[in-house]
Image (cartoon, rainbow, N blue to C red):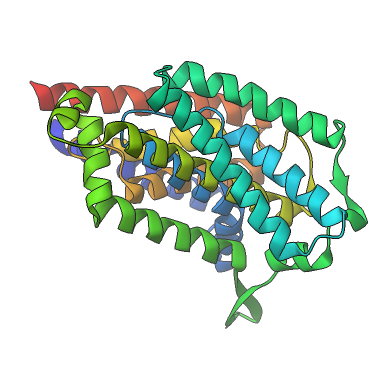
Length: 322
């Protein structure tokens, strides 16, 4: 029974959360429209957390993803406001994320700075750049092309349920694509297996011929790319960009990955576990918001979830070694 609870405790907890909200919000919580809304709200976090999973597989993490998401939204908005076509602005912004992630990779893999220190520094750098290039102001209104923001509002028609037209949001589709790509990368390629080898024992991986430095550089680059993609999605969804709008993504992304780790027998990050972690955080936020629970209380709960997830993951790893 203890082993069963340790392995499936997170899923059991998720089920209990669903039951509590279903009982307290019988008319709104379990509706198809609400769940489609949840998936749209979570799409940005899902993409960022998928990228975070890549570096956490190696035992690293990236504290700068939130500030990179903010910077990406600002860069895209300014480029589009200058008259640049949407597709070009999006491409350049994704390149900015890739370069920013590569910079983290250089600091960690080539220079040898601890990931916590390196990404804490770049968190400040990216955040400062977002304020500098935007002048500390929110970019909205006519500066954001309708073509850009309308994409986030559109989706794939699913038909009607109870006379209500349902649409699968484009942002949700993008998040599903991101998850599938990361799953293929980590679970179905040699690259992914080598990342797990680095996370298991970096010295043993190096001695067995794994190009540790190069792989860490690539992994951080992909995480930066994911953060920029999440920032673009966020800016499109709210039709604006400001220097702080991605600030909550880092904490939630790490929490989601840790929650997913509790469901792995080896206590390792797995993308499908990360998906469950993101859903738990999103459902919790959606249900508590509908119940008019203060946002600060929700922050406390997220912090407690992180503590419990880290503790459960540590216990799982400790028992595996024993």
